[in-house]
Image (cartoon, rainbow, N blue to C red):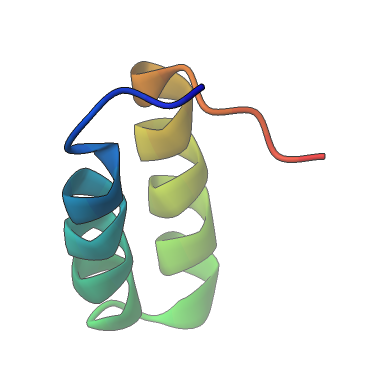
Length: 41
């Protein structure tokens, strides 16, 4: 189960990511998800 507040963090990550170019955004988003311990399946 995800920690409380993680949805807000994910939203902020996504908003910041899309403001950058797509290649950099994808890399940056993946790095931020890793920091949070989120694994995409």
